[in-house]
Image (cartoon, rainbow over all chains, first blue to last red; front, side, top):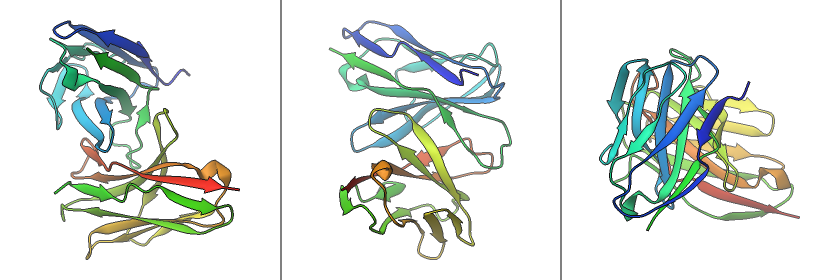
Amino acid sequence: NAGVTQTPKFQVLKTGQSMTLQCAQDMNHEYMSWYRQDPGMGLRLIHYSVGAGITDQGEVPNGYNVSRSTTEDFPLRLLSAAPSQTSVYFCASRRAGAGTGELFFGEGSRLTVL
Amino acid sequence: RKEVEQDPGPFNVPEGATVAFNCTYSNSASQSFFWYRQDCRKEPKLLMSVYSSGNEDGRFTAQLNRASQYISLLIRDSKLSDSATYLCVVNLSGGYNKLIFGAGTRLAVHP
C-alpha cells in the first residue's frame, strides 16, 4: 500500500496564480483532511471530508476550495495564491469511527508564493 | 489564548536521560488526547494515545490531568533516535473530525 500520496512535493507560485494540490489514499479511508503547518503555529485544519460528496471547513478555510468526488481523492485548490499561503501542506486520512483517532499523513507539499 | 499550548523547547538532553513534556489545553470539553512525533521535514506520526488512567508504551508514558487540563509525555532512557518534535493533539468532539495540534516541543538527544 502506498498510504497517502501528495503531489507535488514542491511548488513555487506567483501571487494571483491558482493551483491544485493532489491527495490520494489507497486505504479506503472515509475521512480525509488538509492541514497547513507554519513555524510556531502547529498544524491548522483547512478543510475536511467524512466521505465522498461531503466536505466541511476547518480552522483556516479562506482562500482554499476542496471537493470529494471519490473516496480516494481529496484535492485542495488555491484560487488566487497569496504570500500568506506559503506553507507546508499535509493531507491526512483515517477510517471513520476509528477508535484511536489515528491520522495517516502524506509526506507534505512545500508551497512558496512569491 | 491558543487551544493547545506547548513549550517549544528545544530540550537538549544526553543519552539515557529522562525528559518530560507538558501540554495544556483550553477547552474543558476536549474528549481525546494524543501525542504525535514529527521528524525534521517529515510528516507527523502517531506516537501514542493518552488515556484517563495513564498509559505506558515501553520507554514512553503519557498522563492526563483533566482537572488542570494538561497532558504529559515522559521519555525514559532517551535514545539518539528520540530526537524529534513531539506534537500534543486534542480532539474537541466525538468522531475525531477536528483534531487540534499544538505547535510542538523539540527534543534533541546528544551523545
